[in-house]
Length: 301
Image (cartoon, rainbow, N blue to C red; front, top):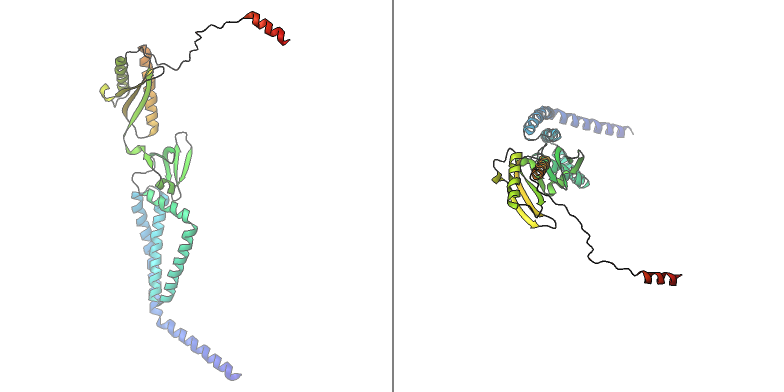
């Protein structure tokens, strides 16, 4: 029994001595690894600071800039960790960490496929110069001002002040009309005048009215005017002209203003804008035989 205890004690001492010798021999590597981790920590802080400032010049969304800055700092810290493990000759541990990270990343990616797709779509949208906060856009059946672009969704405020939240993936997968990218818009105005009207006079009056209403139209010849059809109660025309506007709301206001001024000009010149009228005309007189009606009444009784 004493011999067994003595043998176990000797084995334990030998093991501890081996560990102590390993620690002593690896103290320089351990110190160097700690220095590398500390340096990686401080470098990560500076990298995050400068990356955030750089990205902020390109992207207006704070959520995107903070995320990119944090990711850059995490990359620096992970690089320092892997370097420290390499200095300590823990290559097997490093390989295990990489394998575990790969498996975990695959599982997380499959579980959060929709969320990750919206996240990457938000990053792509944030770096697109043609889509910025404050632009007036039309996409996915909605039209309004871009209020926010974050990692999850795309927010639009419509003309009626309602907020529409659309997943970022749908923004990338569908066409978008951006009204703010152009400084001019074309207004289409359709109307009709009575058949008794002087068509040349109507055309000239309409062009002059539009020209006098909007300062950006220099002369009446800049206004396009086309008669389109003989309607049921009027001769219809299409009027087109350009205005200075960068959103659909300005376009609607200009069209409304043009309608008001054209109506005033037509009323002043006694030009009729017809509206559909239904006329009931009875050409045949109905004859009623009173005697047959009386006989039928008695027969029914």
